[in-house]
Image 1 (cartoon, each protein chain N blue to C red):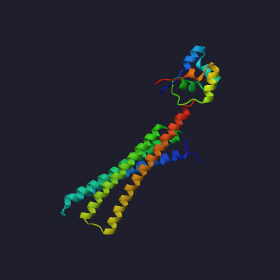
Image 2: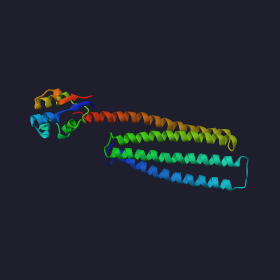
Image 3: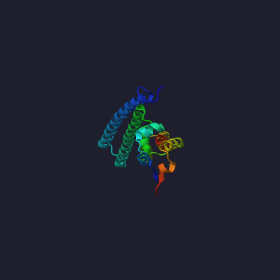
Length: 67
Length: 179
């Protein structure tokens, strides 16, 4: 899929662990892992909103498009 | 009544199918034996008739075709056993089930085609070796045709069901991988 999820990059920038993000966002570590490994088929606006809120970033910082 | 899980309807159907599987194996063996003995005894009999060898060959082909339908039916039952086993284990939307349905579709069409071959054989046999009356011969032909059409329709029906099942698996995967 050409959509790339850059959550791990943002996590490194914010010096936050995956577990902490999962807990703050309210998703399971397994689901966060699916998101990080680009296996996710879709992301809910509510989840994206929470991730942006926790990581203090914009959706474009997390999601990228590559041909 | 529970549909999936232990001691459920699917568990009972699975057991029923296993018994049916054994019954068909037994019937196949009996058919093979009876057909073999009948053809062999006819071949060894001294009453030489017109086109005698052709008749024996035709009878042998029909017997083999009927036996093959039995063997293919065994594969169909085996696939159904797999599906019901998965249902028993609460594995509802598995790709394995879709594959099994696809195999069932192919095998049903194979059985339908085998019956059509059998119909041709029987028609030739009854046409050239007029051993039974017209009504009985017509009844046999219609019966074989009904079996052939039934299996072909069943195969097509399963193909459509399989398409719906594959779509359901896709939707489930999409739902599972929506974060």
